[in-house]
Length: 261
Image (cartoon, rainbow, N blue to C red; front, side, top):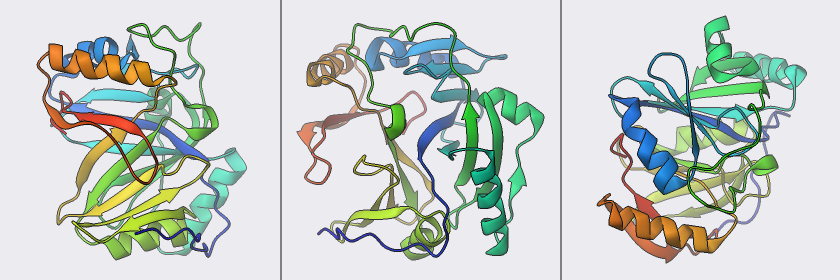
């Protein structure tokens, strides 16, 4: 089922894209081979055991941090500091507890400004501006044509939530995300866009609160096929085999990450 009409937002907040992800792992270094050899990202060591995964001219798009497997937070990019300040005011006016990023958090994310809050399902939402560029050109971990990022952001995330409706209201009425699509069976799901990418966020009502998957898009379908071959050659668990989605028309497969999702 589809719903092509955008749901109006009651605020003027304008999130540009999904800018970054931060994911916890018991041993972040387990991600190194998966990220570069299979996904084609560039692995850049960070402070301590943190790994930064580079996909384009940004310093990094994904950070893997030490911690219990499965933890995550999501960085949504705003145009500038003024837009970030306006977003903080709008969230606080709606009764949402908003916390400014600390100096250490800004440095670890390589951004000029950041605030964070929780959505109704308990997912940590970070709004930021002023991301740093990396040193030199992006150097992929395997031969690929590149990732489709830029104004579209890093890709999309799909989050599991216990109750769909409060989460939908939060992202549409407060953050200004726009409806792309929805489905009622075999489970309830709603898809949202912030830019021309079909969806940067989807919510699944499945009774728990956790990250279901993230998607990164390659410029060439042959690179997807080579990744599919590598996953099978390396014995990495496939959650879904190669196929095409009916809504965003992506040819894709799902592989189990070193963090278990």
